[in-house]
Length: 293
Image (cartoon, rainbow, N blue to C red; front, top):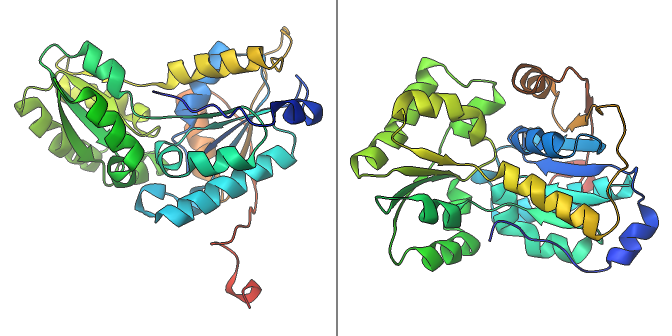
């Protein structure tokens, strides 16, 4: 399964959000921009609000409680500002917090999971590589997904230590990054892998780097387009889809950090020149010590 869709209290969500309200897209950092790119291509008339929790990225090195805490806080922040639907564009946040967030938010909710099923269907050699964060790989949700398709397919799972940080720095091609990626990919290629699952939304920005190393030996599975289609279905189902207009709306960008890397990545890789608003989104685990008595 690629998606999780909340079904509780959707009429209440419709009462506070109309078709002109924004779709909220959230990630621990900049990786969710790959999902925003796909959503914008599929739904060009939808107003979008993107929040990067870059101050606390990467989530892949955080404990489970921290991830739940931040995902819930940011989801509630977006809903309080009128979001009509939420895309949790972070594999790690989906793996560790989607059930809790579903109970708290009364709007359509879409999470992401690594494309294990399509990869298993695509692979001819029956050997599939998976690049994901350590938290995603160890999660019960991922292990359950893997067990479902591992009976006739070997999955080589590799934590992508350092890759999220590289993308956050807007580094998609440095010699250091290429060496790091080669170290992750070569064992998969040596084992006969012909398919690679990108199990983190940051990783599609490394597509060219991966192809320069692997050539045409690896089919790359990226679920961003499928996520956009699922969002489209949910908006149609709940009567929340924006009316078509002649204008291509520019997304609104927010960051819990300074936002400069987000602005640069949006400009260089998405062709969107927009300012990034700095936001403070407090949560139980990130309150200043002075607030904790």
